Image (tube, rainbow, N blue to C red; front, side, top):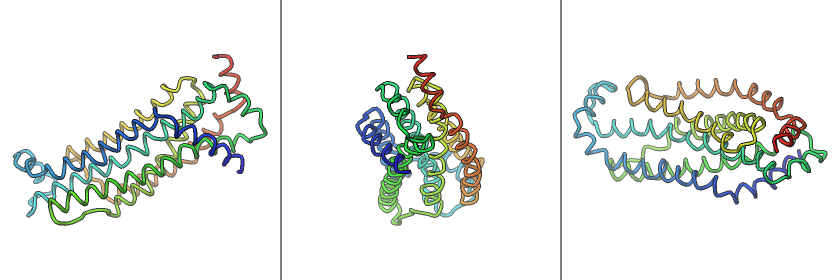
Length: 263
């Protein structure tokens, strides 16, 4: 596995220099980890003046003594899903760049000519996506918790985070999701020579996240520990199948031949 580490160290330097990856990540962090929680929590009082909001709270939670506290708790349910935005997007940005940039920089053939095993090559490129994703997601989690706690303390006088649900999403569900998307990105990138089309998988993955938020806003259900653990279990069962498919598709000789034909 030493060769995988060498590949990771080499490619992570290139990824760090790629502004096309980091600018979207920075924008998402500012919007979803800072602006949205500040706006939602600090601006929650005027929202309660809307009769539709009060009717919605009654419909979902029944009669409550403190509508403001319940509303902020509901807002946190939505922010909980936003925690999955970066784990869903970052691998789909980095993994295709790591693979397809080899073709654009004409470094694929020398790399494949080395005695590096296909498993080591795939592991090195996967780590290039997974490690930054975990670091960025953790930082994003910390920022979001701090912003929410400060805003809630100003508004309600207490700090609601972190909860077990948030810990499950940040340190269990997010890494599993990142792994699946990394493998899916490897599969798509192995079949594509266009980095934009390969990175488009992130947009597809994000759609279910928006769907969950929409269902919660519609009052159909609210995420809880049980739902999250079921989701983790289902995705964990998918991981071995996605890994096998990625290893099978990531055929270095076929990739090299295909890219030479399209060059």
